[in-house]
Length: 460
RNA sequence: GGGUGUGUAGCUCAGUGGUCAGAGCGUCCGACUGUUAAUCGGAUGGUCGUGAGUUCAAAUCUCACCACGCCCUCCA
Image (tube, rainbow, N blue to C red):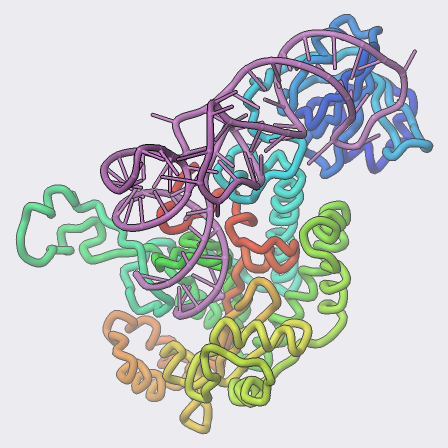
């Protein structure tokens, strides 16, 4: 009977002394004179199963020499072992080498640097750390969809290619079918009417504007898709290709927006703690001590909320000395964010930001100086969520666009939403990989993405 | 993009001017009756990132280049 290690761990008593077959990869092989032990991982579970073999095997000598990384078929009986570190093991009757692992297999049963494993991105999913990270990543996807679907949100996919450069979130990757080599030889401006879309096109940096369209029809919607940023960012929290979740809710204000974000974060934490206990215990032990306690605390307490002005007041009163001086009309520096989350010992919403440092679509507050924006700051992952109440008043939106040099004609459809049944509405963007960093304690965003893209790195 | 640091065996690292360049792990050979990153013995393994320079002598000092890490800016 073919089964899985995950299934065995759940119901091993039922398999007592029964004959089963497993397929998997060797994590270690400890051979002695007349017996040996193989730790086999079959990919279905974080834990390995110990395969015990001895001279009764027809191919005992060959089995002793099986190397780490090889793939096997193992047939044998499940033996319950209450006196050993593992609750059960398999006593092998047959061990068949399916795919040999050559002598220079780079992954050894020992510590490797994260840097080395990044360069071996095709093999790192077989290590304990990355097995855990990517299983939690999969569960995180599920948790997010569950959360929104249970609340009757409609999921939409926003376009990946856009001809708008007004999305306002940073440098964009250009998309073209023009012959670059030929263009190099020509002089004068490029004629984009000859390009594939008849105009200059790029990869999207956000699906928010399109999500707003759907929110004005379905009320509550969310996107979950890839976005692209061409910034020369060399940090532990930035990549060039990232997945974002962007909910957008109509008939809602900034408070509703924050309530939703907070409820979502709590829901996600609970889902992961419930469904990946082995993985979370591993992170807690080897990646970030006290991780589980931290997450449990977060899921039980309401998040700190404060205005940008209040945050600056806190920073000005702080005994710490900052390289960047806190200022009421400036953005928070990374050192400020770190101070705030440490000072309040958990996630912090910062709201009502100076309008000049925020995007054109954010709703202007009555003071005429700030906008109804919010950032959720967390320890480790930095800005986990950025959101705002959107400007629903046509005249105010237009004057803000003028102030910030955003082309009205290009966004005629966006302005139309304010002409036909406009509603107060709000939304936010959640960085998927940053959420994963926060949940796992992994410090570098490149280690929570299967094949990360960063400046100068597009391997695999 | 700005700053800073690192690059020595397959991996993790030691070696900061002086004979043939070191350890642990891996790999290979051997020992071992219950191992948990098993242990023990032996062997294997390196144009010391690349190029130029200083010096009697360079892994070690200088310069350039390349690659990568970290910090800052940008944001998710």
